[in-house]
Every structure is written in structure tokens, then in C-alpha cells.
Length: 92
Image (cartoon, rainbow, N blue to C red; front, side, top):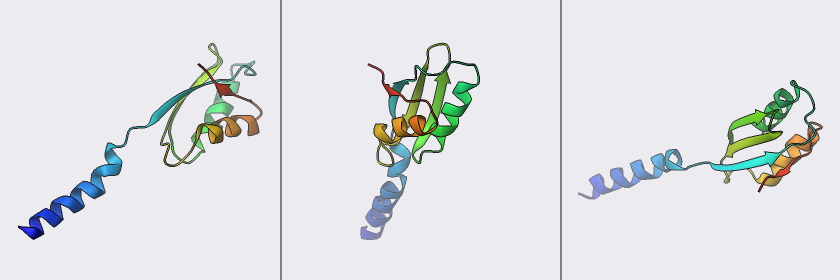
């Protein structure tokens, strides 16, 4: 019985990261002024460790980012876009 419990506990512990949901933030990126800009912004965001998905819209001038907050922060995301030449802020 103890072995069964230990195996079950180990299985739950190993699977726990798979249950983690990503956080979502929408960043305003007003300096995107051409159709190619979103490509650069998306590349900058997806290079940040912990980013699971980034969808960048030129028309809305925003980026919606899903990320693991145990691996990165919103500040790191805005820093990444700024370093790429596209300063961003959290959109409310």
C-alpha cells in the first residue's frame, strides 16, 4: 500500500507542471508603423524563456502574450519589445 501511495504521489508531482496554466497579458505597442513590425515584435517575445505563445496585431498595435509566470515577468516582456525597438506597455 505504501508503494502504491508513493508511486501515485510521484506521478502527481511529475505531472503538476503540465497542469499549470499560462498567464495572459496584452501589451500596447504603438510604435509599430509597418506590416513587417509585428514579425520583429513576435520574434523578440518568443525568445523570452517562459513565453508559450505570442500573437501580434499590426492593426490593433498590440501583442497578446501567454507566458509562464514562474519563468518570466511582464517586465521582461516589455523589456524584450523595447530592446527590439518597439517599446510596449501593459494594456488595460
